Length: 67
Image 1 (tube, rainbow, N blue to C red):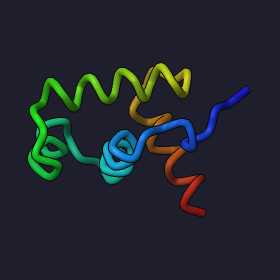
Image 2: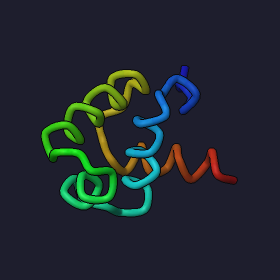
Image 3: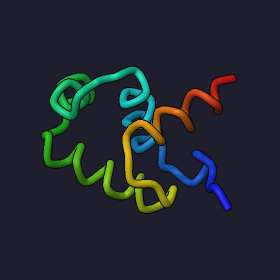
Image 4: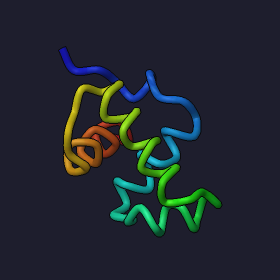
């Protein structure tokens, strides 16, 4: 069963949206005023919550949610 983006916190959703736009962890950190390490921790939680292992899968999920 695929989980939905609704399980993410507001900040995790912001990170997910930027990943879908093709941003790097460094760019995400700069835009959201976070350290790269914090972005990495957010991504780890996002991947765990959504049971995925790749940024491309996250980007696809975000794109589907936007449609």
